[in-house]
Image (cartoon, rainbow, N blue to C red):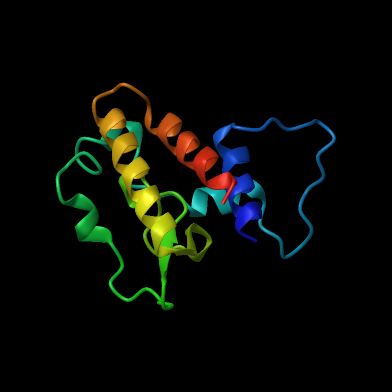
Length: 136
């Protein structure tokens, strides 16, 4: 499921191409673009980064307080809040071992810094995060 969600967002962000022969999802399924858009916080766009993710402490104001827990694991955001991920969307959450979550935190903060410094775009930061998480 995790790989499906990551690939869905990759599709949405343009990381992978699509073919003209692609079939429509069956009834009851969400299309990759709908899954991907559900993973993103609509308040965070390239135009709003300096009112949202680039404001010190902003993610604390939107971070969910009662996420499920498992011993030795963290319920981690696939697209992190620091890069415009949806705070409570189940499609944007997955359990990862704590050491992996800590390594991801370092990359999340590095990419957020690059986005806020305009070294890369928000979409580029999201793509880089997805690429790093695809192998997990």
